[in-house]
Amino acid sequence: MTASLRLILGDQLSHSISSLSDCDKSNDIIFMAEVWEEASYVKHHKKKIAFLFSAMRHFAIELEQKGYKVIYTKLDDPDNAGSFTAEVARMLKNNPLDKIVVTFPGEYRVLKAIESWQATFNLPVEIREDSRFLSSPTKFANWARGRTQLRMEYFYRELRQEFKILMDGDKPAGGEWNYDANNRKPIKSQMVIPVTYQSKSDAITEEVLSLVEKRFASHFGDLYPFHYGVTRIEAIAALELFIEERLCLFGDYQDAMLEENAWLFHSHLSLYLNCGLLLPMECIKKAEEAYTSGKAPLNSVEGFIRQIMGWREYVRGVYWLKMPDYAERNFFLAKNKLPDFYWTTDTKMNCLRQCITDTKNNAYAHHIQRLMVLGNFALLAGIDPKDVNEWFLIVYADAYEWVELPNVSGMILFADGGYLASKPYAASGSYINKMSNYCKNCSYDVKQKNGSDACPFNYLYWHFLARNRDKLATNPRLGMIYRTYDQMDADKKAQIEEDNLKFIANMYVNS
Image (cartoon, rainbow, N blue to C red; front, side, top):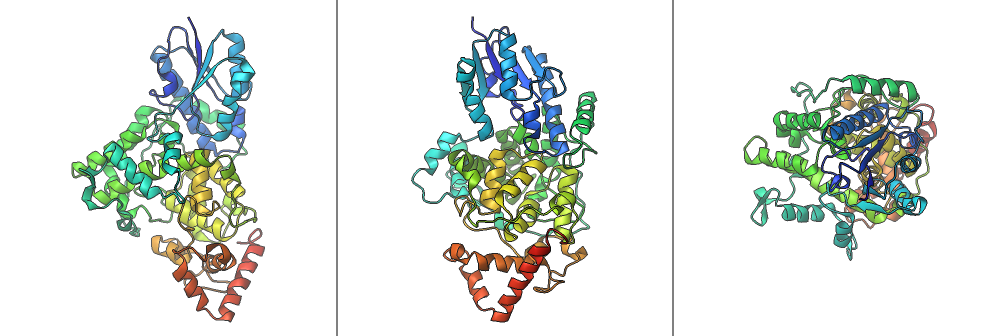
């Protein structure tokens, strides 16, 4: 009788994971490992490491309780070999096994390592499709074939039709596919905002927190307070709390930002989804049920479902279709280095300070903070995509390269030249002022367009467009903006150039 080594990675914490199907509980070994290579190939946020290690340990115990034979290597085990490959070698040396089974991983570099194991260990390696996603890399590649431009909206509509989500026969519920135009209301500071889900740490989590505090002291971010759920039961509770208390207003205010309030009406479920504690379809179905039962309006439900069925599936498809070359894209040839304030929060720009502080505190910031403040600044200031990608991968608990890289290089930085998105998400200070209260307590004046007191976003925006005109002028969505720029007189354009150069020169000293 054959016996398999079934490897479960840290983002595969689902009891329905394909690598567990047909498992022989009498002979097969389920193997999980906390390895230094994965924890430190970038210096991940302390909360991110603690969340994943604790979730992995809880998941291993659940598997043991179901009768699986589990071998689990902790980071500080004396025999820990430090990498997946070395740990698998150690398992094979100590256990007579005939095959390695693993579910398709979430990062290209991990896939390449796994693909080398058959030759390294002289054993068959079976890489199974990750059935938790609604579209496979092959399915996405078939959809993309022959298209000169890819657009998430059309991919999303086809998935809606295939899975019959928010459909009225062959028509979309409410008559429209997308209600994004209804989801852009600024939030008022006096609104009552429900508290996000908070879990109490058990002994396992406390042990992990002590480990992270000791072994990862130099990493970015605050470890405490730690209140993320680390089990499927807790993740489901977080989902149900969102559906019950925040989904109803999520749509209206999903683009809003509020000083010293990180959570707002967002779900805060992406870290659970991306490590497998929640499944995408169960989140989609829960939201759809809230609409059909009258608990949440269509604009909120459609907006939430679009993030999961649309963007999440779409960016994964782009990632696997375009790697490894996608990681090298730099359409604007941006070369400035990431300024220190992305780590220290020490900047006079209140919007950046607020969003970086939220990130530092929580290993979380919502999508508009990431896109229109943190990412928008990096785009306008010409920051090297490699620096920006590394920062986003480090600081967020939901970040894995498959989801981080296309969002940053494609959507935020337009570094792929428009393959993923139809235009750069560039904006001046007026957008931030409209969608937040950040500007009220800023050292700069958002209404001033030039000079030492002006909001830097204002002149950085116009300079970005001017210096990249040869690459953007033919974009039909930017024609009116360039006509506005052309109406400026020579002195105004010269002032934009001067303010931009001065700010960039001082950015690494005093921003």
